[in-house]
Image: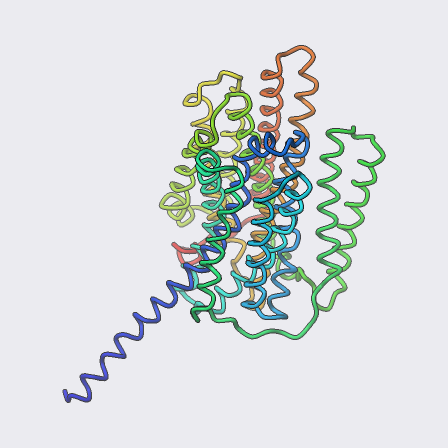
Length: 488
């Protein structure tokens, strides 16, 4: 071999390594952004009692702090993804991160309820711009094949991981700093992600011609918002209250208008081809129901642990460790092995039933003096395992067989389903808990009445999870190969 030949082997060998490092940095940037956006669903949960004391928030307003973020995040996700296609994915991604960061700082400095809730709404808008563009950037940066499959797996796992990390981080920050730091913490993370976007590791991809589906975005978000408002108002003002009935009616009309707008739009925000497939439609529905129960469970148990049991914020966050362990067991080795051996519907339905059993156990055994290790630990472990199995299966099923041009929309729907479900679930289950607590107060101590309310909310969550298992069994008939298990 000549000198010339030997020197030529260096760049040839180094090229794959350099490309691997570039893709690794790109995945770090995208996954960190997704983790930050998702953990804001739950990081605020732990700080709610501290927020209430500091800003003198009424109990009825606590769920708005959580649900408004989930609502705007989920309701505008598809519009955010379309905006990235039209105006540049990298540009819209950065815009979303900046908007999210500024809103986080404003919320951290909030002097009252109005500023805090408004900041959470703007946070959700920023997240809705950034999250789908992050997924689109992943698709344009990573070549089709194992590299993209693994990257999609890491991205998808951030949904479950971000929720539980938010609980642990929220407890630590609230305990040792202040509730305001659960919002301030976003700033350094976002700055690091923004710096990563200027490193040249992300491939923006081509923009498309067309226009933003404004009617679709407005009617979808307005419809879900009206339903959530109706649920919250009904729990406090009564279900026959004129305002409650008007909100329910408006929500139904707007969602019907959304369906019609999508049907006749030349550039629909939600192409019918994506959800027409029974497997994908079933996966999205299951994730919607999963989101309905999951965030509401964190909300109700956090209030129980801190208000009824007197746990500190840090103690509360650490109490969710069994949930983290369960998620890790299911999403790590157990889930992929089960999906390789069994039909997807069987594993997803089993996951939802395991989660339902965990919630039902906690609901049935919960008292103001319940032993954590006998009641909450097994319930949290079970819900973690069930949730992990469901996330693995529904993420892969929701992307199965999607045309390349629709991959961004299909991926966005995974987030949309969970986020909209979370907003609806907190409103509905918090309303159930409040109604039961009010009815119990006359004949029981306040702590007992609160516990009965939280138990009722958890039991409703178990019923929703059972319904999700039925949906999975009836709609999903795919069998996932090893290659379709994202990231495994």
